Structures are given as C-alpha cells and as structure tokens.
Image (cartoon, rainbow, N blue to C red):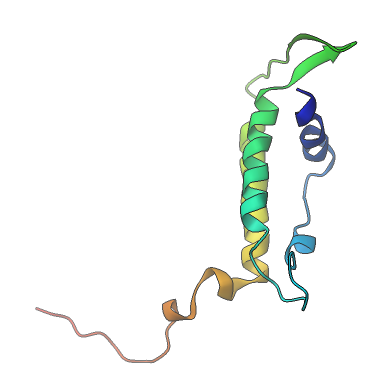
Amino acid sequence: MKEYAAINKILRYHPNIDMEPFFEMGTEDNERNLKALPYLVDWFERAKEAVLDISFIKNGVVQGRETFSNEDARIPLVDTRKLSAIYQFALAMPLLFVPAAHTKASNKKRKRIK
C-alpha cells in the first residue's frame, strides 16, 4: 500500500537506525527521557504490517502481492531492529529502565527461613 512505501524504504536503506535524536524528545532542558519509546515501538509494529502487505503497484493499479521465500525472513528482521532500538534506549538511560529500588543499596544478607 502507498502508506507503507516510506516504511519499506527506511527498512531497506537504513540497516541500523540511530535512536539518539529521539532521546531528548519533548524536553526543553536537553534531559534524556523515554517519551519517544512507545512511538518507536508502535512504528516497528506498523513496519511488520508493511513488510507483510507489500504490493506491486503499476500505473496506480495493484498488480499482485509479492511473495517471500523462507530465506527472505522480513518479520524477524523488523523484530531485530525493534530490539536494537530498545537496547539503544536502555544503554543510553539505564536508570530509567531499572529503578533505584531494584539495585542493591546495602550489604545486608537475607536470612533463610528453615
């Protein structure tokens, strides 16, 4: 479909999408945040639909659907890129992914109940 053309071009020509411009989305004081992450995850979900719904369009008429062989696995490719994007966010802002309450604050050992 026509709306998927941009998604397919991005996936085809940008194998590793840099997420750094999205780290400071919606802030005035250049503070990093996770505001863009849900939008990016949603974009990758639409990208899955886009690679499944590729049609040949010639002179404005849909000619047929493109069929993919097993070696052209496009869905795992989109999933891999989605995980890569999430990893870039986690790598840049680890404390926003793991709250301070989940880190060890003291050296106290837990007692076992027998």
